[in-house]
Length: 388
Image (cartoon, rainbow, N blue to C red; front, side, top):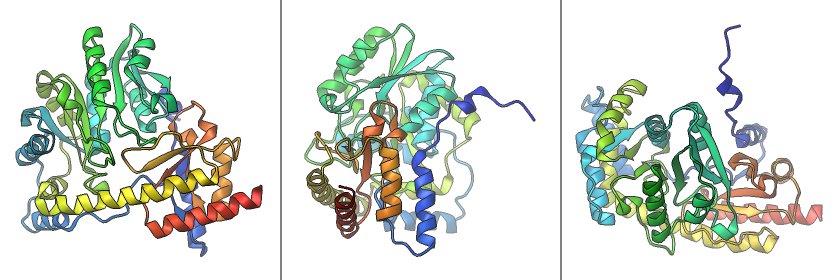
């Protein structure tokens, strides 16, 4: 057999994919499953975006774009920051990428040498630690909990800093918790990184999906911050695989070269379609959907608390509830398996998001209809009454 790279043994799988595969098997056999595990909006891509993509295809606009993306799309993203957030971002600092994952790969490849550390939160989005490993960096996972808002705060970052820290990676709104970093926290994190010679990378892929909280961007706190974003969540373009990365001006040319070599360019049709994401018609649709997500959160949060799930921090963004289930089970993965098999409800176990108290937590995604959420809660109630 050919040699196997050591990194393959360190890349963790998505455990929820086993549950999702089993859920599909149950559905194929005739079972009805309530899906509360998938972090993908249930809405179709807004029609103006679909129409723009279809038109681009009919017009034959199917050739490679520049590696950093269509100039018109980078200008549109720049205009979005200016209009919505009051922040001026030079289009030359923006690179269009194959999803937010492509953006993070670019940032990490540009910033992290083998053996250098990247500090991030535990729990956190699972791919982040795997991509750090891919570039031969060292994951410095910092345990976070309800007292920290499930966020890597400036105080925690300073306390866990090491001499080899190359970057801090934070997310706001965050997956799996749906919590936000405040203006003050982002400003302090940016200053901490400046003072200690490291990069601040901010994942903003759920930006726009905020409730009862100010919608902000880390770009307001300096031009030396790396910001990752995506057309997948707020804009509803998951399968189009399109994101972007904002970088300090001094990095733009080098990352252009890196992008040429890693993926040449993001999908051309997706880029042309995304030009319609910023239109007034699309924005109105997206705001209606944001309000729908808020209504789902406001139903599901008290319902789960009533059932015995401990959710001490009310999420103000994304579409997730990160729930402590220690009063109900000692093993959240086995609990998730039983819940799927016996009640037909699919959740994501905490083990997918790290190691810190993972066996005590599950994540609920309210990316399905209110009717399905009501049915899921009722099934949970019957299941928990049956095991009591």
